[in-house]
Each structure stands twice: as C-alpha cells, then as structure tokens.
Image 1 (cartoon, rainbow, N blue to C red):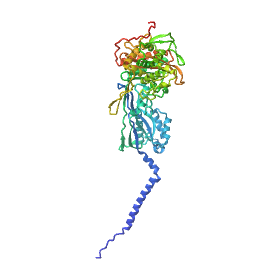
Image 2: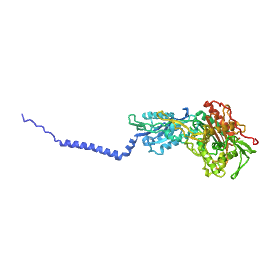
Image 3: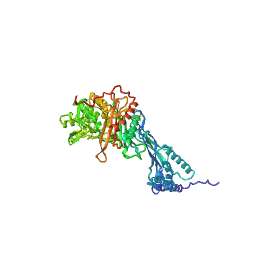
Length: 612
C-alpha cells in the first residue's frame, strides 16, 4: 500500500477578507442610512416624529360658587369644553387629502353653531400650528357629538374609505359660569368673560380666590390620538374657594322687582335699593335697575353692566339732614322741641335760600324742621353749632366723616366711589349753607343706607359687609373678619333722632306718609335734590330718595331707595321712593319674621304757637 495522504487546510486569508468586506458593506449601509436620516430626509422624519409627540393640556380649576346667606347658588359652574384643533395635522401631506381643513370645517360648523368659512380660516391661517381654539365653553353634548363623529371617521379610514379629517380636533375642559337666577343681583355679582376671568362686580373683586389654580396634564399622542400605554404626567388643579354672601335671595328679589317697576313707571334713568341689617351692618340686598342677565351680556347696554349702587356719586338732598340734626343734638345746641322760626326766604351768602314750597313764616320745633324737610330750618339749626362759620363748618364736617361720607365703604367693589366731601376750609360761600341740607356733597347708595343704620343701631356705625365667609377646597368654613365699629352719636341722641324720624312718616305734616306700614313704627326721611347730569356736569332733573328703618322702636332693617331723573309723574322723594320703601320693608320684615311694634308712635309736636 502506498503512503497515507496528508490533508492540507486552505489559507484563512480569503475568508477573512470576505468577512471584512461584508462587515464593511454593512457599516457602509448604516452610515449611508444615518446620513440619509440626519441630513437628506431630516425634515421628513421630523414631521413624522411630530405626529408622535407629548401634548400638554391645561386642567382648568373649577371656579368657586357664590351663594346667598342661606346657601342658595347665585353663581355656579357647569362642565364645558373649549374645542381645539391642530392645523398641522390637516395639511395635504399629513392628512393625505388636499382639502382636509374645508372638510373638517363643514363637519364642525353645524355642531358648534359657527360659520364654516370662519372655522376653515382658523384651520388654515397657520398650517404649522399645533393649537388653535375653534369654539369656547361648549357643552358636554357638543363634545360627545364631535367624539362620535371622530370614531365614525376612524372606522371608515380603517376600511380604506377616506381619512379622518378630525383627527387633530380635541377639547380642553373648562368650567362655564352660570347664574341660576338670571338678572338677580347681577350688578353686584358681575360676570365672567370668555377668558374665564371675572370682569365686573364680585366676580372681578374675588377673582383670584374664586378661580383657584389650574393644573396640567401631559400625555403621549400619535396621529391625533392618545397612546393608551404612553406616559402620562399630571399636576392636579386646585379648585377655587366658595363665597357665602350676606345677601338674602328673596329680599334681593323683592328689592329688585320694586325698583325696576318704579324706574319704568317714572321714566327714570336708573334707581337702586339697599337693604341692611341694622344690628350687624350686613347688606341683605343691593338692587339696581335697569339690570342685565350675566348669562348673556352680548345684547346688554354697556351702561347697565356696572353696579350703580356703589359707582354713582350724587347729591343726597334732604336724607342728608339727619346727619345735620345728629350734630346739632349731640353738640347740645338744640333739643327736639327747640323753637325754630322759618321764614319763606333766608338771605345768606350770595343768594336767598328757599324751601321746596312757598309758605308763610313757619313756627316749627326742631322735630318739625326734619318732618317738613325745611332747608331754611336746617340752615338756622346748624348755625348754632359754633359762633364762627369756620368752627361751624369744621364741626359739621367731622360728623359727616364719622358717618362715612367722603371715604370708601370698605366693601372694595370695582368702580366704587367714595363720594365727594371737600375739606371745610374749601367750602364755598354757598356750600356752607347747602351742605347741611344735602347739596354740595355727594355719596353712593350704600353710604346713604349706612347713615340710617347708624342711628338705628343706637348711634354706632358698623361698616357695611357683603361676605359672611368662605369655604375652601377642603370644605372648611372661614368666617369673614368682624366689621369696624365707630361711635358716631350717643344712644340717647340716636333714640331722639329715631323718634323725630317717626314724625316724617306718621305726622300729617310729614313728607313720608306713603312709607307707612300697618302694625309697625316706621322711621324715615324723604329726599329730593337737584341732580348733576353726568354728561354735561350741570344741574338737570332730580334725584328722588327715601331712607329709613323699622321697627322704629326696635330697629331690624334699613331700606334706602334712590331714583335718578324721574321724568313721568312726581319727582319728590316721598312720592317716588316712599312706595318702594314700603314694599321692600314690608317684605323684609315678613321674611325675617320680625314681630309688629308693641308701642304707639311718640308723635312729637311739629309746630308751636308763637303766641303761647
């Protein structure tokens, strides 16, 4: 046999070269692809990545409610949505159709109640935008219709029948402000604008605490849909605080109905009624006429949107005489039965002063001066405050200030005026004599009511309040701070003034007979003043008013009414506002179950016989 054959292994170098070549080709493919992705097709891939992105969504905080003193809703919130869209998802390249914005607008217009052309413009104005608001504060039913339509389009697209042109349409939850009682207390409450911020009244004043703090939710989206397994990050919203007011809804309704009816009958520009609890200073009603419906302000006259009860500064007229009488009695320069000889004309400064009617010389008690609302008698009484005009003016000014005239009420409502009360050294020659009977100074309706509440409360002024307290997100109730109290006159002086005010209503010679309420003693005062036209700055027309409290022997409620520029029928305060006062006071006393007076009126003498 021959020798065994030997096996020889081939050289490894060719194989290594082949493997190296293969690896080089693979790496080359990766490099080429990388260059293509990062350089050549970068924009295209960025666009695709943009369809799979994290979307931030604002979580709107629920706005706090505003209720009356009994927890009845005056302003509350309901679920609503802002309908949004992503225009960049409706471009021909992304949506795979050339007229996606038009199709989307045609589908959404009847659901949203919007013009199709307007919607299409919003969707095409900025095609690269990822966010545009199509409609605000839509109901849940509207969003459900859109959601159902989106699902139907998705199903059709999955079957190869068209494309979902609503893929980029979404919604943001927002709370819609609702006022269940329509125009009730609208001037006080204000309203919330389309941006969700309070735009007037308490809604504006308390906006920060009512609004709460918005949260945020971030989620992954692909092709206009949330990725079910995607990461979701959420910062919860903090709800706003609820506010409980001192207002009584039923008394507010009575006041608003009465003043609206009188403004209409009188052909007046406007009117207001204030109802105040004399014991606490709390306001039970603040009514304006004409009013507006805060649920829909689009058709409302801009002049009616404010709160004229605190924003109108006007000359109070004879209701202001109560403060002059308080100064005279408290300073001890006269008593209720002091005799005052009242001529038909009184020459002072550069003019001859007169009363509302021509009359022979009247022989009145100080009580009669108030009951008959004599301007001349008031001037003569206040001249007794001091020996010099300068001292007299300073004393009267100090009382007006203590009653709250010429300074903020403390309510802090938007547009509130402190009124106008010049310093005594700046009073003109005529103002020295007109200010005592209510001309030459100005105030707002809340200030006027507070003057009478001060006397009803035994001479101690309690700053008016509107908020009883707040309830935070946790449900805990926090009472409002106690109001400031100021001693203005003594209890004895206040009691005498209350008895004098009874004469205005009860006595046959009094000017407030239309304010009588069967079974109750009523203390009140009429007011009829020349009115400064806000447009011209000149006197034109009148302000008719009536202020008072009841029961006079044990006060519980103060009611103040003012009507600006009555043009039909009488313009005297007793005729125009006396009936309003009676309606509102009667309702308030019954609503609070205040028992009738247990005493007969004092019937202090109004006049005296000069021969005796």
